[in-house]
Image (tube, rainbow, N blue to C red):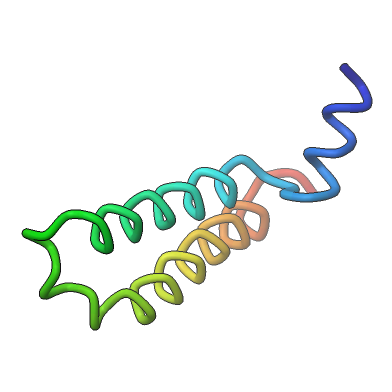
Length: 69
């Protein structure tokens, strides 16, 4: 179990980042595979950038404003 946790901490580092990027990828897969969402394909790139940046900012702000020093 320690090895799995060490690999997770090395690759991701935080659960908020993992969940944020995973949700972004799932939404992008839906946009590209569901024909009703085809008009949103032009927004795929900016959506990915905004989603990843927002998850990174959420993690950074949580660390910066935590009560731990």
